[in-house]
Image 1 (spheres, rainbow, N blue to C red):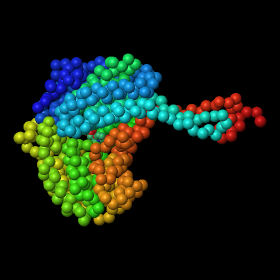
Image 2: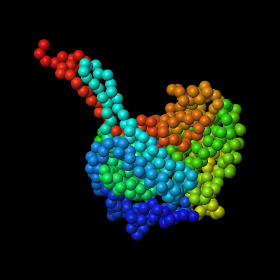
Image 3: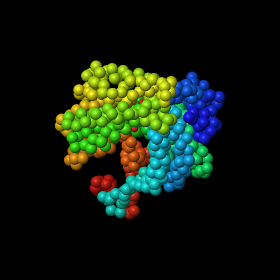
Length: 520
Ligand code: NAD
């Protein structure tokens, strides 16, 4: 079984390890070891020590934004297809380190190997996507109302992009942002989760190694500042950070959005979800059950798109409930490094305590536990020192207060409905609006769900669970989820500024709207 020490050399991390300490900032490719109080790092699998992080202070954040600004000035003039070539090289380096990067993700988040590898694959996929995009950053030509005039829209590089990321996707969130930002001609300053700093160091090492062989890319293109919320706030407040792309809880989003708005900056918010699936009487129940179990229990319920609310038609509720209880009872919980494990640990003790408190609250609100919910004792494939739980399935009499909250743990609330309209209303009744799904073989039911009066979420799927999005579509959600869109489609426009140009090819100076100015 591998441990951190097996991964340090293959991931190029040895250069930065000083005794048992890790740097809180990589500025212009150079590691900084601030004298701030250190933060102890522990593996969620078994509590093993991963050393200490020396978090960045306001000084390092300012310095790194300053260096990124200088790098941006050079990079924005490099032709976009050449910028795409850099991202292609990064993608090739990621392919070569895929397995070890995934192993580090497993050690820092507790994800099972297949999901951790899937996360690294997202980085590879977004590199391929960004490479193609580098030849398609197109604007428009628009008909002018004036003779011999032309209107153009161009997209230009934006500036320094600050990325604040959550623990549960320690590489993919940054990669989605950074690879597009680089191709669009920007520099990036990354503030990863304080729970996953080593994955951030490994990703930064890989990019810096690639940059070294790429003559026209300055080392300052990719910067790293590590630490908790206060480091994120320093980044959000810095007036030289043109765009702050922040992924995490709604609470974090409120704080970051206000800090950025106070200086009239731009923010792109990817916040919490409280995702529902509707199962109609016309559903393929076998397929629905499989999709529901992965969406609700996979990643130990720690995805923004995890399924948390299940709205099942009365007619099929008993049959589906039986299938789910059986499937839940067969989920293997334990060490995510074991190939048979499907459910790894929660991220920390606080997550376990919160899950247990929420289950008590749900019981008070009329919930009835159908299976799971309890912590798993150490023994066999379950190491001591981690926080393991059986995913919980609860029957709720209605959508009570606790169901309106996003609890970042494997809890699935099952509720029954009679009319599809009511189920859609329940789907939309929460403050978050990230992901949703309907399971039906009826074309009309599916059409209503994905139509204008259907699901109000950024993602609305048919016969596909709420989690596991592909990179080709725009990803994000409405309402308290923040409204941002990342990854595919036209999300690249977030990382560029638009300039409208009016060109006069003639000798006359006609004014728009027929305005006359001058001697009559
Ligand atoms: P979190 O909000 O605790 O932390 C996320 C990041 O924000 C971390 O880097 C953290 O240090 C930073 N941060 C926290 N408070 C801050 C503040 N006041 N100012 C500046 N920075 C601050 O979230 P988490 O526990 O790491 O991740 C889980 C949450 O993230 C869930 O709510 C989940 O739904 C959400 N999430 C959303 C998406 C999405 O795409 N919508 C993706 C992944 C996770």
